[in-house]
Length: 157
Image 1 (cartoon, rainbow, N blue to C red):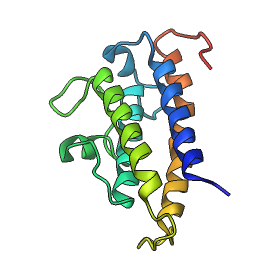
Image 2 (spheres, rainbow, N blue to C red):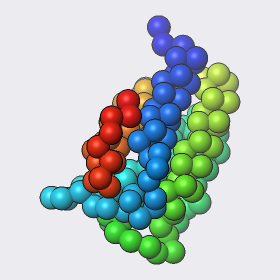
Image 3 (cartoon, helix red, strand yellow):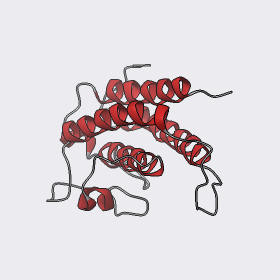
Image 4 (cartoon, rainbow, N blue to C red):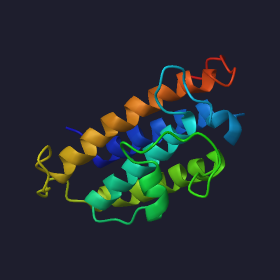
């Protein structure tokens, strides 16, 4: 059975991997678009924070992003292609990722993961958290390829 400690450790592992994949990269590096479509590293890290905020909200906790940033990095948002008032630096996004981890670590032990969750795909808060862990891992894996766009082909994990 999955425990609160397991959930916290799993999200923490992903956070560490994202930091390792972003190590030595600049915001400009994070804005390089993958060929053939998709989203850059900057969008991917921001997107991770958006969905970690959704986890926090599902557990009744407060997220870290303001509404403008949340919308900029959410599903179906336009690709992040450069500087703009709604584009966050890579360092700011990594700091926000760290803050979500702290809040998740505090919220999970207090959450009722068996509580009903009103959504067509999820029946309980725990199902929502579990799905978003899969989502978090999916995008964490993408960071290796996105790192390579900046010419960093070193294996960091």
